[in-house]
Length: 248
Image (cartoon, rainbow, N blue to C red; front, side, top):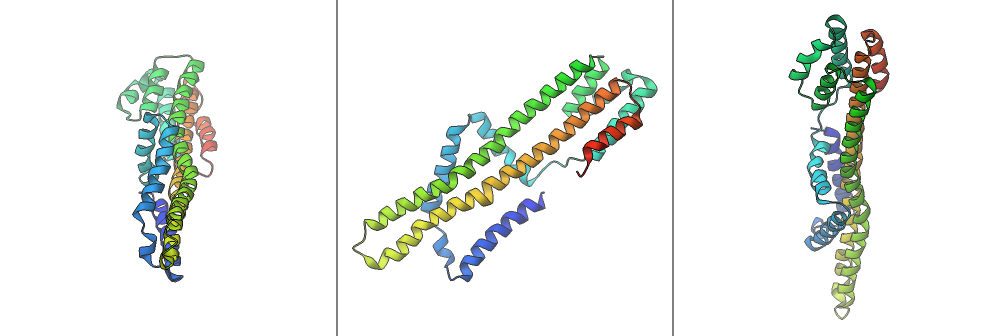
């Protein structure tokens, strides 16, 4: 579980609600189902219009990555590649065939299989780069989905506030309810800002970080397998791949 995501969302909501209560705002005044319906329904309805169904489903599934990410250990990737390089240097590329059968990662499995099959290094690079680009394109849709939702939410919140004010203006005869009615109307604006700046945009940013981590892992695997195919020294391969690790 990504503790930073959980703590961040809890801290944001806790600070905002806590600050409002300290200022004398009753918690019940912040709970407005109608405003929530307008903001959530309007925001995600508008966002759904922007994307094909497959991208919407993919984005909703990828929410879990922000909370339950798969750990990407770049140093372990280097160790695995060096093990493959050492084995290939001692026993030949054909000795990696067993690794291709036992490894679970589909990207590594495909890469090793191509190396064992003796594919041309340039073709190997083109094939694996195509896989990386396909992964990036698929995942970018999830990032863009939440960024789009974050862009729509504040505007939908304003629409909710305007609708509330229209209702208030239609009941000006009862002045005792004006203050409460106006306060309720502006809750929609708060909801829109919260949905955008505490949920959608942060999740989009977190997914973007996860995407970059996974793409770096795949690029390291690509460069490592090409180096193995070219018969490069395992020590040299290690130095080359560790340059990618850097601060990760």
